[in-house]
Image 1 (cartoon, rainbow, N blue to C red):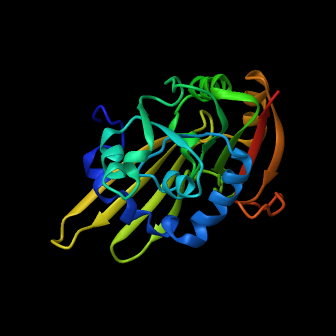
Image 2 (image 1 turned 90 degrees about the vertical axis):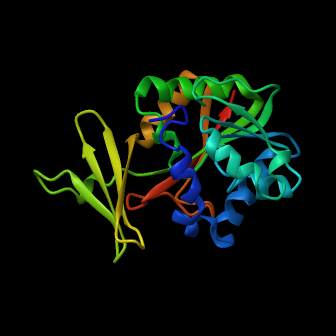
Length: 244
């Protein structure tokens, strides 16, 4: 693992293509609609800004966006895109790195809170966000619900993608809440590349407690960015906490 963490040059070079469906306007536009509304004319802070999937269209809506990102390789891809130079970026771990000024909204999308692989780091992230938010500001997280109901007794692997050239599966440790996503890709020359990503899955109630410890309270929770009701069968949630 390089100084860029698990998102070094090889991963950054193909990140947008590997997650192409997440860059579709039908996926991005509802996210930007919610965040622009919460910003309310103020500044937005994206934790794990990556290659700018959300930051760039949000900035195009007139919202000043600043990012925190550990991977310089991912930021280099952001800088190569139209408007990328206008996004300020602080290089560092978003659990602790400090950006200048205060923000109306901070956000972590696409399961990025799970990139912090300990409970202590996730708690530190909430406290770091609280330091950046103006009074009444909001913290938004989009994250999956752990798929433990798919695990029969004795099994710890859940496949999430299988086709002729790409295989993906998650492994779970229910005792520690550690999990890993494993990606195996068959290249055109017949070689295969294997990339693992470590995570720590986290439950909605756990996140609510982290927010309370940081001086925030739950304002809204939906299944998705279209504000669908969150239910027992929701595969993910979008949660909004407000700084009190």
